[in-house]
Length: 306
Ligand code: 13P
Ligand code: SF4
Image (cartoon, rainbow, N blue to C red; front, side, top):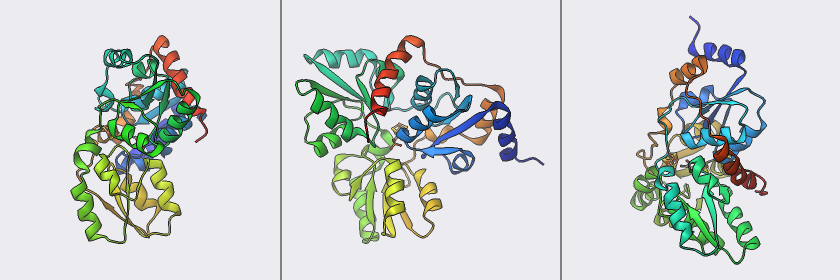
């Protein structure tokens, strides 16, 4: 019998499609993906692909970003309900109110935001380029009040690393903020004293404080590949572990907790990927007016050398 893997390959050829997946996806999605990456790498891949159809295995804002960057392509999301609770923590009206408190606000929007929020922002960032973007913005707009939305943990982290004062919105990622806790990190450190602790900047400041480094998922993968260390304690969504183990079979990985699972990232299954591609379902599309404005914020980010 033709396996679903073979059927999917035939379908991909027939539809001239590419499957992109975020690192937090299920192992079986890693196995069928043409490209796996963090938010920044995925955005760059979207710009570079010749495929006519992109199946985006991730959450809704990522598929929207793919359509904003590539409006002539079909972007399909395997589960239309795969959202990001942090992205939903700021509405356009709330952003307008936030901006109205400052004389000359300049908004840096984390890529984990809706297209509409991006359209009302000045530049985007991801967790791998946020510090560089902030430094660049601050050096070229010295007189402005810089607003950072929506993640308070990433915002506070970039403020601390750069030493640049910013105004941070009070959003957070439930997976990182509520489940990756300092007591779990301390316990893991005690159990694995030689391990390096790597955490995502969406974690609480108390967690980042006791880690060796805070970095994006993509930077974590690169860092571990090039490190001489053998043991790592990992503080981010646990989907990353599949990739880390696959790429580094001789290294050991210990999640801070197994509770750090993003339920939205896990909504994607192979069956859903197959179904949306076969039936051209769940097309993600951003209306032209919003798309053109949101594009500018993403375009500016992609042109910052990082
Ligand atoms: P990365 O850009 O590090 O992949 O982060 C995306 C994300 O959703 C983290 O929760
Ligand atoms: Fe959103 Fe957090 Fe899930 Fe990332 S891990 S998609 S920030 S809820």
